[in-house]
Length: 468
Image 1 (cartoon, rainbow, N blue to C red):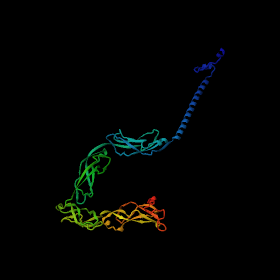
Image 2: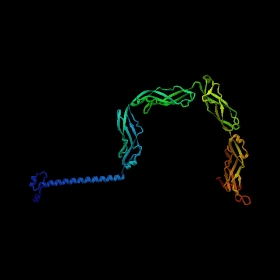
Image 3: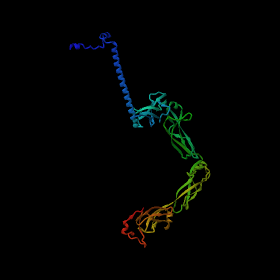
Image 4: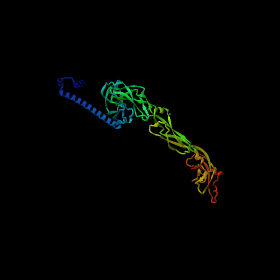
């Protein structure tokens, strides 16, 4: 047993030298080849694992893309660009307000479906910490979903020129355009301030000479015009300058207007005589022109009151509208600026309205010849209105109350009366609004058929029929 154990070959120590290996009967190259083989096996295994991992990743990405594919599209809403800055004391030379950003995105389809197109993106341009001068600034964006990739921005940047802010005081000037009415003249305008402070970029402020407001006076006849005018910055070349701030923004102006010496504007007062016909009244009166400008010696004009009279304008017996020229009664030595000696007076005549109640017996119309009808009322009251003269002239045969029985068959019917009135007369009410009518079929002998009720019998109320 011991001999067998001693006969087992000893294990080769990898640390033995080649000489020892040779002495033990093992060739040196065999050990090296075995070690290289083991390393190649390990490397090949790692490569296989990596390839499998890559293939698995590709399969996973393909599966994910099929379920939630990437979609490239334009963001459907243009995003307002917020301007941050510039720092105090600086201003941009261009107007950056109301600018918007257009985006092109690549995102998973589920991200597109979940987008809130009003709040998912915001855009801004940051002008803070920039000095005066020209700068190229990038349009920055903030987004809610980090899975969304912004492919393109339009615009992606702005070229911005910053200038220092300056303020100057300049005079306020009020200009007047147009002319007042004939016979009037304009005096110097009076404003509540004579200076205003204008603030803006330094290059623009240096061009401003004053601020101005404009009063329009075309045809004005008042003794003065009071207005609140917006102020505008004006350059030394008399051009309007935009993009500045003016304090105050408005100026209150009074423009005195007075009559030219030797002229005086007065109203025209027609002299009315008589009355319209009975039952009529004067509802309106118009004079064209309603005023005239008198020309003459200033001392004479001071004696003229605020109006001039016309010759008589008669209304006697008028029943309709009419117009007529009448002469002006002017003081000696005084004429009108236009050379006018007459005016046209127009009178509007209206009938005096009244009302009355008339009692009328209803008339049957449209009844089938095979039927007879009995009316439950002998008369109805009709309330009418119209001109007094017309109402007073009405005759008995000028108006009627009709019960239209067309198409009605045997039975009890509630019929709405119809009123026929002459032109100019209105129906205000009819009492009662409906009238009961009993219709029966005629027998061969001219009497009602058996079983068809006569008016007032119990059977008559048994089968009422509504008026269509």
